Structure formats: structure tokens, C-alpha cells
Amino acid sequence: MSVLRQAARIAWKDLRIELRSREIVYTMAFFGGLLAVVYSFVFPSKSELVPLAAPGMLWVSIAFAGTIGLGRAFDRERENDTMRALLLAPIPRLAVFLGKSAAIAVLMLAVAVVVTPMLALLLGADLFADPGPLALSLVLGAIGFSVVGSVFSAALIKVRSRDVLLPVIIYPLLIPLFVAGTSVTAGLLAVPANPEKVWYWMGFLGIFDAAFLVVSLWIFESMVIE
Amino acid sequence: MSRYLTPAFALAGAIGLALTVWLIFTATPLAVDYTPGSRVYVSGTSLFYNQKIFYYHVPHAFMMFLAVGISGVCSIIFLAKRDPKWDDVALASAEVAVAFGAVVLLTGSIWAKAAWDHWWIWEKRLTMSLLLWLTLVGYVLVRRFAGASGERLSAGMAVFAMIGVPFIYVMVGAGDNHPKAGAEGNVATLDPAMRGIFWACVATFFCWFMALVTNRVQSARMEREVRELREKGLDAGLLA
Image 1 (tube, rainbow over the protein chains, first blue to last red):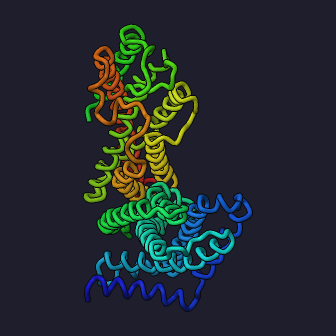
Image 2 (image 1 turned 90 degrees about the vertical axis):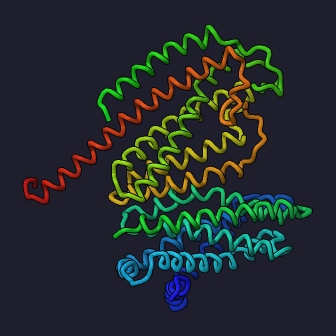
Image 3 (image 1 turned 135 degrees about the vertical axis):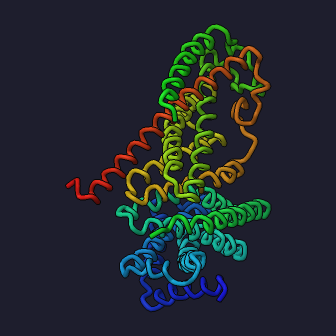
């Protein structure tokens, strides 16, 4: 069985648990939606400010919801002490890592599917004018977030203050990703839209993902030792 | 590491500090006639003695980047070889980098107030230094509060931080109004009277940096040895 198929099986295991309980998706999506409501109260929502503020709101919601999802996804392995079983399974650690992060990326995208229309609706942001590039940037953002997040969540699994330390670790490392993501969205919302900006930052996101994925693949093995 | 290394570096640093303070105020030209667009950008006014902060600010920034590099490389070796002595070095330079970074940000802030009339502006290189510094603070926090896994976690963080530096650099972009002396190799364009003393300052703070790092490496190693001995004693039933 190739590594990718093994990874797909691990991811499918996580997603199937999720499909049966729907715990993470429901809570993450509800939380993301709540954030959208909070934003529309606490930030000025004058129509000329929306294109400037909406990109940040979108990406901060996704980052917060993603952090919660990451914590839960690995808590599940910890509560049942299945992380050890997963690491002892006769498959490369690479497959475990890829499977876990793929599942988390899918969950994050599920949240984005809820939050994006919420923001568009509540703020009147024209987020769906050009849905292709927006979706691509969200996919790239979710991949980068889940890759880095999985490495550290897996290593934090035995640490008592993991809930606080996870954002302390990954947010500084992911700032370039957030900046690139918001810049893509800002380029799309600008009047008139700025395709040059959009594709510059899209490329940046892609290269960032590739570099961090390569490092994660190398580092996961030595970070997660039972 | 020889036990004379730390005192030797500390002594060299102390002599260098006394010497450079003297020279900075006597031998370097006073910033009175720099025009906008020249290497020291001042909006209409002159910096006078405020410019002297440059001699401390830039060497500290050099040392911070050096420390991040050392910490990242040592963390890679630590993760690959699992030899804790590399981790001691990574930890020591990261901690010292936090201190030097704090000096960079503080002195930079004072400069910014004098030159641009704001304590803080989201200028490219300031942003970059701040982000790097935040990562370093995260590193130290993790080390402190993550318990036994702290070593691996912070090593991983240092590796990612090092990979992230070029991205932050591209993200904040080239082209800014930050004085160009320093990180971009434009030290060569400095006034000859300033250049020698500037490099003397870099050497001074390098000695100071090395004194701190070697000292911290030794104490980190001792902490580790005490921990290991205690575990051995517990295993042998000699300690309660």
C-alpha cells in the first residue's frame, strides 16, 4: 500500500468519526459563525470600510476555528490513548502525519464554507464576485495551517498547557500565511479588483505551503516520539 | 568549553564598551547635515546626538540575526542527532536573542521618535524584527511551560522560524525608508570616520553576546547534568 493510500485511510478514519459525531464541525462552524456576528457588532460596518475589514475578519475566524479544531482532533487521540496505537501501526509516520493534517484541512474548509457566506451576508461583503481564487486561497491557507498545526499538536499531546501553547507556537510561525491570505482576499474585494495582487500572494501562499510541508515531513518524525 | 572563555569575552566586551563610548562621542562626525535621501533619512531636521544610537542599535540587530541562525542550525542538529548538547546551545542563543531583540526594538523606537516623530511605525524592517522577536519569545515560553516535551517543541519552532525568515522578508517587501546602513551590506557606504568605529562596536557586542551565550550554555549544561544525576539517584533508590 502506498504512503498516499495509507494517509488517505487515516484521514478517512478521522473524517468518519467526525461524520458520525459531527462534534468538531458543528462546534467549529458555530463558533466561526458567532465570530462573524461579533465582528459585525464590534467593528464599524460602514459600506466603504467593508472591503478593507472583511479579509481580516475572514482569516481571523478561520485561524481561531482552526485552532479549536486542531486541539479537538488531537484530544480525541489522547483521550482514548490511540495516538500510541497510531504511531505503532505498521505504516510510515509520514502517512500518519499526512492523514491527520489532510483531515484537519478538510474540517477547516468545512468551517470556511459556513463562515464565508455568513460574513458576506452580515457585512454585505462581495466575497463571491470571483469565487475561484477565493476558494483556492482558502484551500492553500487550510493546508498550510493544518500542516504546521498537526506537527505541533501531535508533539503537544502530552503537555498539560497544550491549549495555550498551541497558538503561542503556531501563530508567530503562520503570520506570513495570514498576511498572504488576507492580501488575496483584499485584492479580490478591492474596487476595482486587483488580479496582480491576488496572484502574487497566491503564489506566495503556494510556495509557503510547499516549504513548510517539506520541513514538516522531515520534522514530524523527530518531534513525535513516544 | 574552557572556563576562561566567558570571562575573556566579558573582559573584551567591557574594554570595547568603554572604548567605543568614548570614540562614538569624540571621533565620529555629528549628524548635522544629512539630507533626505541620503543614508540617514531625516525629514528636514538633523538627528544630532540621536544618531549615535545607531552604533548600538545595528550591532544588536546583527547579533539577534546571528543568534537566530545559531539557534536554528543547532535545533536541526539536535532533532537529527538527539544529542542534548546541541539543544543547550540552541536554548542559550535563543534566550540571548530575546534580550538583544528587546534592545533592538527599544533603541529603534527611540530613533524612530527622533527621526520620524513616531514611537512605532509599521515600517518594513521594524515589522520583520518584531515578528522574529515574537517567535523567539514564543520559543522561550514553550521551553518554560511545556515540561519534558519543551525541548523538542522549541527545537521544532526554531527550525520553522528559520525557514520562515525569507518569507517574512519577502512579505514585508524591499524598498523602505529605514536607514540603509546594516543588514543589506551597505555598511561600505558609511563615512570612513564612522565605519571603523561602527565595526569596533560590532566586535564589542559580539564579545558581549559570546560572553552571555557561553555562560548560558554552561549553566544549561549544568542544569541538565543535575537533572540527569537526580534521575540516576532516584533510580538507584539513593534519593527520596
